[in-house]
Length: 330
Image (cartoon, rainbow, N blue to C red):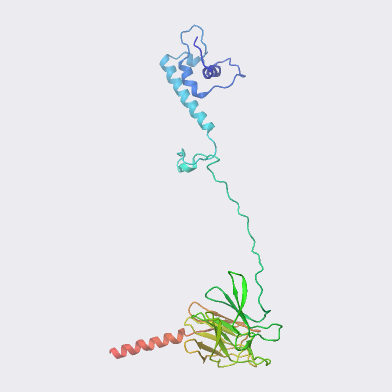
């Protein structure tokens, strides 16, 4: 009888027809070696092989044991393989990358970082130096915000102005306008200055609508008078910076609702009348479109809209120039 180690003893138990089922199962890795070491002298077998195996010759038994060993080891590896793919191990499944074939160790898989959703919120910042309503607020090229005029108690207009600095979150006073204004417009020009126009209430006076306009220079913090508008305007008119740098003012109130419009030219500091709207408007909107035209829409009690622009006129002029050039060539 050949002495067997614990693995071989398990193999013997597994192959016995009268095996004790309480004995632990065999280790598949030792099947081949245990099968080959079986005593074949016929004088009392330590392992009672199944009848079909016992009748085989030595070569056949060796081959059978090898096959059994390969199948057992492969099956054991398959059963021992975790169900999740790992990273960096070749895949045994066609079409599956190696990074998906074996599970990564817990330490190799980064734990997800959960970022809680943040709802928008409001945070108090510095207070203005003066209470205002009906004022303007203009973002300057340096990031500060210019607040001008307005009403401090709903009646008296203000000539004061102040600047908000987002870095310090504070307001500081700046130069005063020449006129107290409320319900006026403020337009940032291409050179960084701010054009303020219309709806002025003269200091010491009451409710006088004027056509005056003035410019604020952020570099010096001072105001300079510029040309007056063609028509006095107040309350809810619009001022739109055009693509060529000029400013289009339209509608509003004088003593009545007006349909007139005019253009401010920063290069000359002057205003010139332009085509009037088809409908008198105030409290409307004016939007610069991508093609350079201006869309004016709505107004008090209105649903209509109209577009202001030069495209048709300029196209016609361009065609006339082309025709003239061809005529000269002929």
